[in-house]
Length: 402
Image (spheres, rainbow, N blue to C red):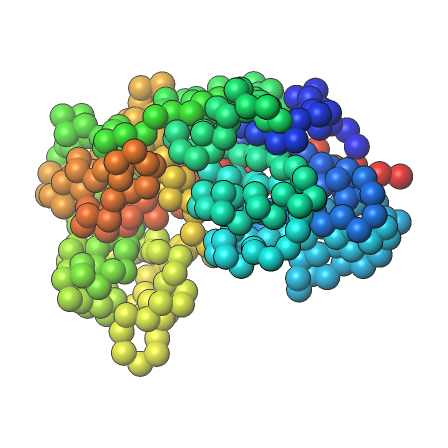
């Protein structure tokens, strides 16, 4: 298999525990599958795991990659319902999710890859997986993009001082999958803090305000509604239901109005928007949970209520990471090259207050649920859908062993 020089340095490490901090599109999943195969064929009957933040993510990220990288003659059987490969030597490669750490208890492990460890609960490692490696003296590879100075940072720092541990740090450009021109484009699109974290793999300290790129002096201005299509971000909490109403002009997004309704439901939110803006083309960007969530009577989903009202609905199949929503909003508020592409009308008082006041829980990168999150979530669903910070690049496909 063709590994890049940075990937090879990790693959060839003789340390028991390795921590790799890398920028987006470094090739983390491909490296993980190669390491999993190496560990599974070291000897017979080994138990090797790939663990992602959720079971769904494990399947979406690694299942197809493993199918494409594992030599077919090595596979005795594969079971997609349990996400497991049994090799001809009796070793098993299993894909797991860490959303419920206690479900991972009870098995002795020879090796584990923890992908995007920054997004997992730390007890998944300290209380469950680490003890499972003890009787076989198993090893681990932690790999992912930083998320502030949380438990992933602690392990990365440990790799510089502890015996049996080794740490690595590589940028997106180091990975060799993304050209310099794309890196330069991302630098223009993203705010400086997000760019450093996502592309330079820097452990950016997140403290205090979440939407640090918002400036009342520069982000708030009077906006003329041109009568065109309305773009509405919507959050479905019943107390309150929140919506931010925007228009687009060129590359910029302007919040011209907001709706905050306590003790309400989706039908009433729809009626209010139609009352304020009759005969307007409306596109709604709701919480992806709207596909299943029901805040009105009759067994109807929030998504169906919006569609039946004649609104066009743009909802992703699954939630983006919270940090991706936050990064997307900050990047539109102020990009790394100093440009602003998101403006708020003075009449959007709750939106302004929420952007100014929502904070992280002290010492963490977890947003406080302090009442300011509802409007920010509504805005985030819209902005992240229209201007996601994730950019898909053409990455060379892994080569099967022959």
